[in-house]
Image (cartoon, rainbow, N blue to C red; front, side, top):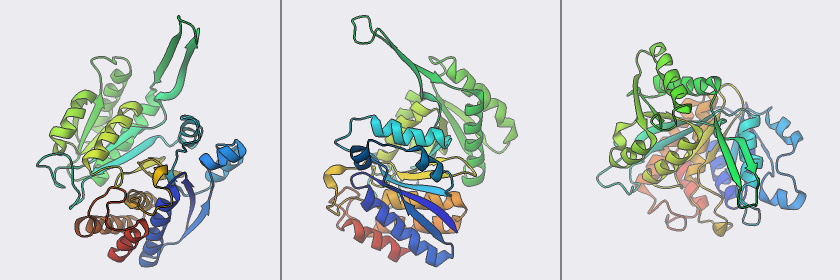
Length: 349
């Protein structure tokens, strides 16, 4: 029995979560596990109604769950930054979700903007440090609002934080991947303090993992090679900011935000799984949003919980639907409604 907190969030989040849960419930019946779900109305509507973003009492409740299943956050009537910092970043920091895990995998039948590349070329994973770096919130203003204004934003990298992220990447590469190649993405030629720490820790840990091939590349080079030669990569590990950027690039080469899912993970503790795309408020209630990213996030959640067989079968079902049913992954162009896509995955499962 797994206790799952469900946060539909804003916009089309509820529609995506509904289909994700539909597939998870089908997997329950097929594979014999059970889930108890509890809904929380965190998001823009609650903030506009009550002024609350993440009440302390709710945060304490969330710590008691096995996992969190998130829809999407973002409301057109809420100033940018309020929900992102007050909810998403606070959940990452307060629950210590120190790894952001982003598979970049092109399914058969899904189009990619990369010429002459197919599913055999685009299949890698990005492990992003999720609680430090430039997102730690260190810095401030001096003489704000004057012609002499100074803004300082500091990247915080601790040996503790860097090492545990690297260990997760090494373990993931060893346990989950066949090629067993780990690439550190950094900027050692300019960011000489932060990435000196990353690079030293990377190579100091390496001998503990004798079967893993170690590689390094600057972030600008990786941005080029992800487009030119995505087949070079197996697992990429990097800091918070660079990971945020290259995973969006990864989403585009795997077919778009409609298929991209991610996990915010603390091994052995409550972790959060979500579609990468935003809340897409202009599509709310129309039944045209693509739910596959949410369904894939559900599969990632099951894998994290130890239900690996069920997770693999859901991914296989999604791949089958992509290759044989959908006209497109874009909202309104799939050839099916949101709920019908969920039904197709259940049928394939």
